[in-house]
Amino acid sequence: MTLWFVLALMTVAAIFAVLLPLGLSRRPQTGGTETTVYKDQLKEIDRDLSTGLIGAAEAEAARVEIGRRLLAAADQEAGPPLQSSTRLRRVAAVVALVGIPLLAGLIYLPLGSPRLPDFPLAERNRAPDRGQPIDNLVAQVEQHLEKNPTDGRGWTVLGPVLMRLGRYDDAVRAFRNSITYAGDGASKRADLGEAIAGAAGGVVTAEAKAEFERALALNAEEAKASYFLGVAAEQDGRKDDAAAIWRALLEKSPADAPWRPLLQASLARVGGVSAPALSDDTVAAAKNMNETDRDTMIRGMVDRLATRLKQNGDDVEGWLRLVRAYMVLGDRDKAVAALADARQAVAKDAERLRQLNDGLKDLGLDG
Image (cartoon, rainbow, N blue to C red; front, side):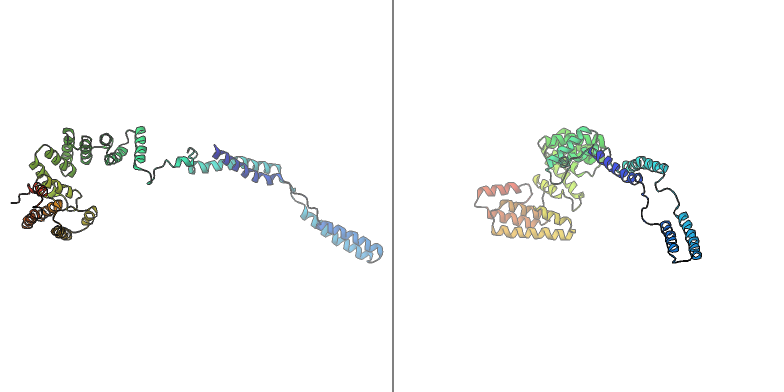
């Protein structure tokens, strides 16, 4: 309402600026003109004649010449009246009163936003920004989806965020709605299965397993589904089946696949082998390396680990990582030698020796 009031005032001011000059009449000129000058000259001729300054013949000739000029000047000064005609002023007034508002409306309606509601400064803080906590942003998306429950794209975006927040039940609902309103897909089925397993405390239930199988039916290369089917086999006590699933996935995974460390750790857990533990920064750097550089980097890390353990042999976890790393690199002899060094280092500590033997019993190493 305030906007329209301001626009109305501006329109009135513009109309007033146009009409004001039309309402003013031009004042007649009060200063000297040519006709006045010539009339004064005629009077001067009469005075000069009466005083004898000029003769009668000269006076008559001067009167004729000044009279001719007076007539000419009078014709030039004669013209239209000083005030504008009433008709022209009325036309101009109508144009100002009707034309200006009409023109302003025709320009503003397509270019402006007359139907946009008021947006106070306090309301602008509701717009999402990167500085807001993730919970606030999620709440805004959920409010949107309550009003627009068929927004498949919104459900697709919301599902993974709820997973990261640990809201697995809500994530299950989000993934189901994403499939319903945005279409089915292998990755969506895998995400749904993961959410169901998360809601069950990490257990791959029959329902979750069914979703992983549906994902593989849609795309046999779906890595997440394959991995969790391995987890299901492990939880069922079928470690050999789990290892077989993970080995097959590891063999066909790209060298820079982010899930390779997880697969290697899982294989070690069920009796396979694993790669040495890498930090997040190291893993990120390794993704940009070629195979030769990556192998050189890993071997350098293994050598540094071996050197450290020779100086401090009480680190059982370090020995376990070293032996498994040599197995991954194909250096069985070094793995056996590292195992011997490890047992010698912790021989005097029965508990550490037991932990070491338990961690390495499924690697197939003698001794």
